[in-house]
Amino acid sequence: MKIEEHQKYKERLLRLISMMPDSSYETVTRTDWNVDSNIPRPYWRMFYNEILNKYIERLNEFYEVDGFEIANSWYQQYSNDSEHIWHRHGQTNFTNVYFLELPDKEHRTEIKDVEYDAEEGDLITFPAAMLHRSKPSKGRKTIISFNLNFS
Image (cartoon, rainbow, N blue to C red; front, side, top):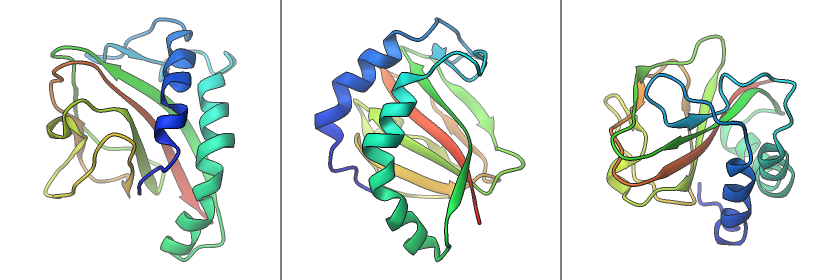
């Protein structure tokens, strides 16, 4: 799904992410995945309120559901050669990745045995049980990700 407001919000989101405490996870350069959940996440509040909220209706229609709940959310920022190994997300229906910075389409999230096209500014949704990874990055790549359960 193309996020039409991407260029309008990109720099502001990156600035808000840069103010988050420095934390890494495995070989991911920066993330708030393991940061205390009581720490405010203004980038997420902005992303949800000003961007994602406009697409909820489209997601509901596409998946033919009445609504959903977001189980958790985080950002990940990759620099040269950082990666996220093959993994899946348990106890949730779908995983979503918003490509905030994606200098090369070749470095989009890889989903095992699935071919898809995406570029910077796109939001992808896929079953959380599917194996996926972020290949070693060339340049800086930033994603905002969240898990959701449909009701």
